[in-house]
Amino acid sequence: FKGGMSPIALMVADDYHRAAPGGQGGVKAIGNYAPCMVPALGAKKQGFQEVIYLDAVEHKYIEEVGAANFFCVKDGVVYTPCISVGTILPGITRMSIVQIAKDLGYEVREERVSIEFVLTADECLCTGTAAVIAPIGKIKFGDKEVEFCKGEVGAVTRKLYDNLLGIQTCKLP
Image (cartoon, rainbow, N blue to C red):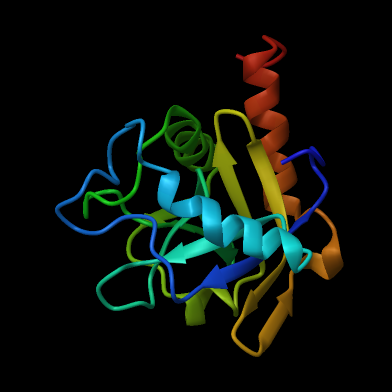
């Protein structure tokens, strides 16, 4: 995401899936993100930076944002999809954000996170090696379009970013 800490706009793909149970979605592989190319191009043509992928079985649980892990915050609790289903790539940035959030005193729930729940969240973000943390300003799902934090960076997202960057730059222990 080229905007750094500028909130991004995402659309949910309900007709494309990045990975399926029994496949290779949970491992780094050369063909792992090829299924994302067509929907990502379509999203960009519509003015969105990337696509949120839902699970391939029930079509209602968040999996990943393109090549990034997804998080949301509701009522001070941090949620992220659990990686145990084998379709979500575990990453060091994801693991770092989970630990930093816990260290900052947030409850972190790694569980199946439905798109309907996400649309009621207080703030959303995604993480990845290259993205580090990208705040999500807007999500479009079907006819619904939800804005988070009035299009600004959320307070929890900012704290997580500042702490991760502080650790990476040796300004924080």
